[in-house]
Length: 82
Image (cartoon, rainbow, N blue to C red; front, side):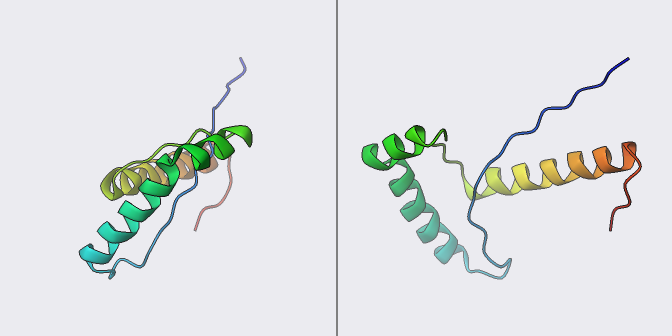
């Protein structure tokens, strides 16, 4: 029996955990504004990307969920993890 797995690619901006909330909010606002700009969104779509935004908390959860998924996948196929 063959098993398949799907992977997706996402891009995001990260900052040190010690970054003040006010700075995180400011960065998030500026990035979301850019991604949602019609001309930027058009260029992203032309390159094959789907412009999406999320909250910093949602993005953090996505990173943690994907990390857990890929650690499990690595273990399942016998790769060593650190």
